[in-house]
Image (cartoon, rainbow, N blue to C red; front, side):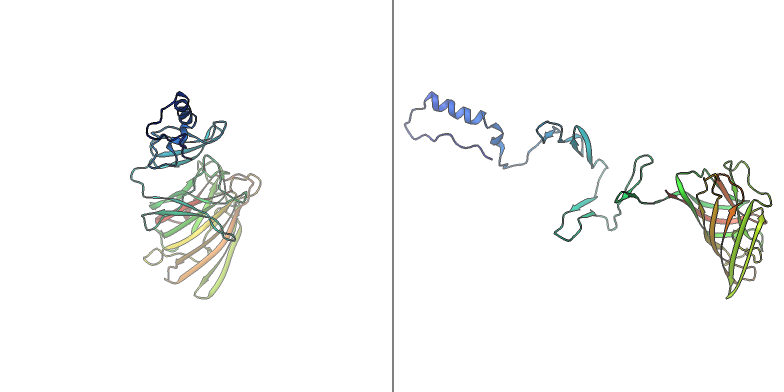
Length: 305
């Protein structure tokens, strides 16, 4: 509130020491009120604005363009505007009864997302329950290679999902497959009996199934059909590995793929497979039964626990 006037003098009145002292006391005892209500902007000039009685909660701008809210002596909430030429930010919206409050992206860009970033191995939770998210582990393309290998699988992820497209064999009439490793790709499980698999495919309405309980690889496409290597016969699909890091729960996968046969006919295939030994899998590779991979584009995702 504004400071009040102690006394108004009239023309010819003698200023007494008592009145003068009382006027000064009015000022010195209410110094903070001299600046309020504000009639112009207040410049803190980087100084801290203390908010509570014990002095451990405050607002300060120790770093240029960064507003820190200190609680119990700790910078608990930081509003960071230190990025050069900022144009986007957030709006926290209060609402009336029956309507949920909002957190809204705002700024001059047409399309603005919201990026939630955790620290270390922290997770994002909803009502106390961790929200399972997918991280991109690797992404790229390969050509004229015997296989594409994915190493470094860890227990940080519940599952891994491989998306691939434009997958073409160098050799006509072969099948895409997958193999595991338990030593991060130093060696591969290639012995007959290391895998079980089953697969179902459909060619222009004619369905067929195939499988094996004693194989050296998991066929992503049934071995009673085959993929062509010419334009238009490229394959695309996905493979999901479940809990590969478990040493007691054998690594399992599901898969689906669409491709063109050597005849040019369209084929859709889906299936599953598993390792036959109890071992933690930390790498896998895709490869054709015969010949190289002529070309493939891929992205591997990790599903957080």
